[in-house]
Amino acid sequence: MPRRGLIGAVVTTATVAALTLALAAPVTGQTFADELWDANRDVYDAILEHPFLRGMQDGSLPLDTFTFYIVQDARYLGVFAEALKAAATKAPDPAWARQLSADAQSSLAEERRLHEQVFSTHGMSDVEAASIASAPSAVAYANHLLATAHTGSFEEAIAALLPCYWIYWEVGKSLQAEGSPNATYQAWIDAYVSPDYAEAVRAIVDMVNATSGGADVETRERMHERFRRSSRYEWMFWDAAYQRQTWPPE
Image (cartoon, rainbow, N blue to C red):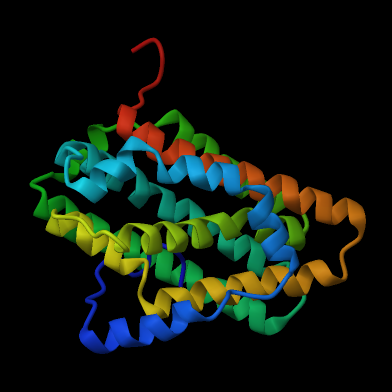
């Protein structure tokens, strides 16, 4: 399932033991996915240093800022699901199509869960949630995914979708090392280091590696471009939440 499909997961002792084994093995060998990651390590490093994530880790992030982020994320999920379904129609392997379609359904289920649970938990009504405008950066990221999935090749689409999975897994592992004193933020961190989520990320990484094998140089260059743009949008998504980004001239 996609990155946000496990936010409500509970991490047990058995889960932690399984996670230890999962993290001991590398995602892949020296592969195209590794090449993508290494070429964008500067973006990932900047993400880890962002004050939104630093605030989650030390517990200082204001809850209303996190709630703003959750509102944006819930909306993002619907778009992400549409992009996954569009990519599925182009998948050269029926198994890949089924997996992407299943991930799309998981995204929609998580969208509903966030709407029903998180908003009520933090005392936000539907009217209040609707009054929060979608951040410009969030809209731009969504449009990037949709445009790539609908008009680009399958290789480009899956490369654009990969950062959404992979960056959250890596962020979760990094934040888990120190944990958070805030129970809400710790639960968010736990979701992205679960073995189930690790398995989902590995599946998409493997898909990118497999599909890049037969790609020509131009296609691989476009995959690099799409991956980097999505990675930058991931940073921008957190920054938009931290800044409570609005549309000018507000």
